[in-house]
Amino acid sequence: MKNLNLKENQFAVGKAEFATGHVLKNDYSISFSNSDSNQNEIFEIFDDFQIAKDFAKLKVSNNPKIECWIINSKNETIFTWDLNGERIV
Image (cartoon, rainbow, N blue to C red; front, side, top):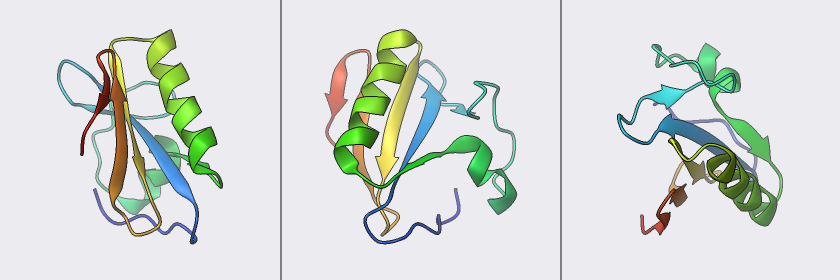
C-alpha cells in the first residue's frame, strides 16, 4: 500500500481477513486496489494511539475472522492485533 498522508500524531487502523490477509474496506468488502483514492475507504483515522488501539481490539473482538494493524504518521506499522492477541511487528 502506498504511504498514507497522516498528520503528526495521527494513526490509521486497517483491517484484513485473518486467514487470507486480504485487505478489507471499512464496509468489510475486499479491497482490490492499491490506489490513494481507496485509502479513506480502507483506514479509520484517529488522533490518539490508545483510541486507535482500543478500536482495533474491538473490531477483532466483534469479528475474530479479521486482523487489524495501526500505522503511524511515519507510515510505520506499530501495532497488530488478531484473535491470538498482539503480534510483534
